[in-house]
Length: 193
Ligand code: AP5
Ligand code: MG
Image 1 (cartoon, rainbow, N blue to C red):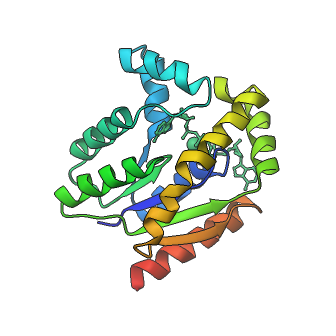
Image 2: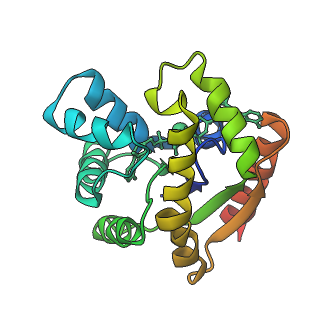
């Protein structure tokens, strides 16, 4: 199994690059943001509870997303590997993920961190908000709250994996294809190491 975390702040391009990477490397895409939005669309209890936090740009509780990921791993027993997008977002989630994978004889192989300036993030998200229908993209205050939440709780996840020498920083500005090439090179270097 080859398991990778595509890491970075809101708007850094995780979703955009995930679509291309899963096709090239045959991985199963697990995005906790997408899973939560599908719970909201289906009006489940979990979705309704998550929506009020997401609309404020705050993280949902660790137990909720860890439970969703655990089920997704169970539901895909024959996957060649997973691409985690938007997860883990706290050190507690990272520790839980390592446990879930080790119970299945697997581990995280690499964390690719997309590096984008705050001004570019805000510009991209507000621009997407014009058409995406995502309620957390339409208001600059909420967009900035998501970035604050990232700096406060999520950036530490890269430090957690750095101690195991699994982190590669990637410049997240440029064309989508340039960034994709840099991500592919980092993955292939790891696969042949
Ligand atoms: P989530 O859905 O994960 O959103 P996010 O991380 O805030 O970021 P985005 O998905 O908006 O950005 P992205 O990095 O995927 O970039 P994208 O490719 O879309 O989370 C939403 C919420 O759910 C959270 O706030 C939280 O409440 C909750 N949640 C989710 N996971 C959780 C967890 N694990 N724990 C707790 N709570 C959780 O690109 C953005 C835009 O930029 C697009 O319009 C795109 O077209 C454009 N773009 C992409 N690449 C480029 C480029 N190279 N140049 C110019 N524009 C570009
Ligand atoms: Mg995304």
